[in-house]
Image 1 (cartoon, one colour):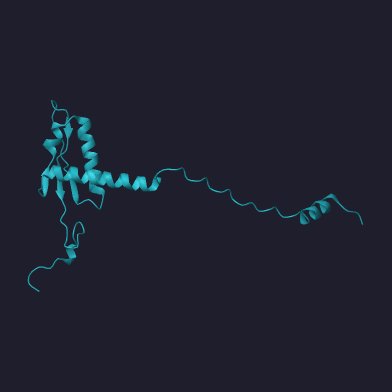
Image 2 (image 1 turned 90 degrees about the horizontal axis):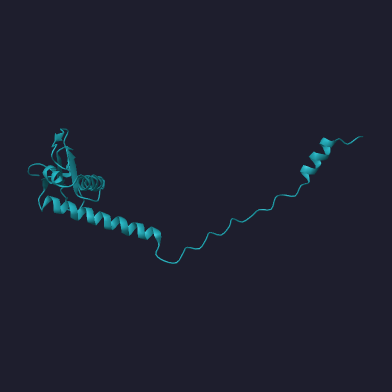
Length: 144
């Protein structure tokens, strides 16, 4: 009986020792200093507080404020930064404010902000539990 090269290769493959398992490398130790995740949380909290304080300042203690005229007096870069801050804070469920942008376009060729839309800021009501927005399904009309 003659042994072929294919038989030799198959036999060698069957008798090959298993590949030794390797442990994954140890993760690099954290650098000394503050925890980066905690630092990011602190930064987000400070940003949320700053935006909330800014919105409280804009409504001047009331429930709503029209900001179109106020934004028109700002340099356009500051107006854009203010609108972005307002929209980001309005999108945050923890912030009790809502921004409404009108559909019309106001044009002031002589102003720093030449094109704008009406912008209003509203404070959302808080229910007795402290949740923002309140649940309208929980409101009952008339005597019980």
